[in-house]
Image 1: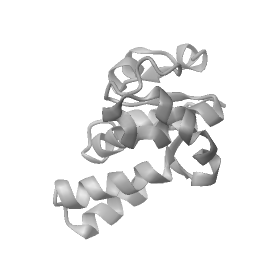
Image 2: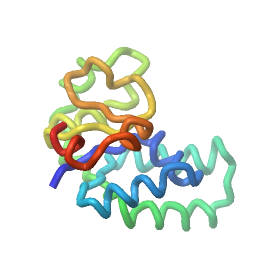
Image 3: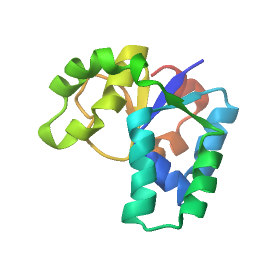
Length: 140
């Protein structure tokens, strides 16, 4: 089973309705979608603090997300923190858990920002994934 590490920006987009069908389709094709616990907290904070969505909506939305995306325990990736931080530019430092989990699990990243380019791990955007086949992505 191929694992994709999900960045918070993809989760927020999914909960806004734009990429949830894509995540569900990846899950249905057998991809293991995993998000670091740190990014799960960031997703919730963006929804409640930045987008000011009602807590009841956020609770239901996150519950739906956790049906297709699994939260990784920090113990699964914290040992790779230093290596991840070394590979990220200063602006990308808050995303170290995504890169650390990808390094620790030898997985690709699904993100819509550029922080992970040049870090030595495969990076997919939602646009790239929409144009790829499951076989292409499994080779990542």
